[in-house]
Length: 183
Image (tube, rainbow, N blue to C red; front, side, top):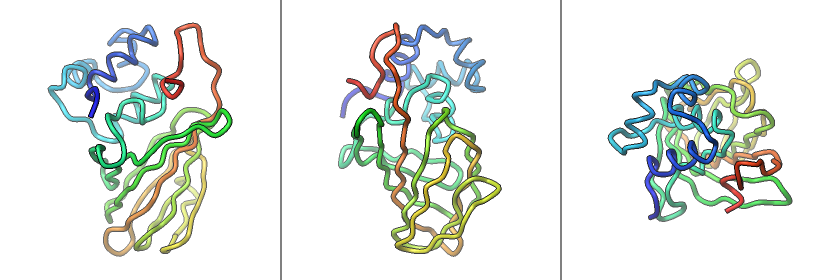
């Protein structure tokens, strides 16, 4: 299955030249929590992983070991997501997740500048999108919205199944080396 979330997090932080303290400050995640994650003494919630990858200017999938049949789901307040695949079209990285959404309301903080999300409902009804303009979607319907603004997820009846696409904007490799999706 590859490296653990902790191994991937430490490698990405070091590639970015960030100390634990600096990552804690930028991400809003406690230094102790980051240390426990890096040492595989703690599991990570979806919102924690997004805060860390946003601070590290990396896609969520950079921290997730495996995809498809080898992937393990990562959960938040309402969303449990499994990485299906990732690919680059032109210079845009797209990650595809299979997700289950519950009736609990999940608020997601803004991701990195230029990130967009597309939700396609497979089963059920959901309320998704930017916090102020979330829309109700039924099975077979899709919505693309800015992921770089606060947004929300909530199933309206029971659990709902969706496909979530994360669209990461083109990036220029920095002096620190290749971006995680360039490998």
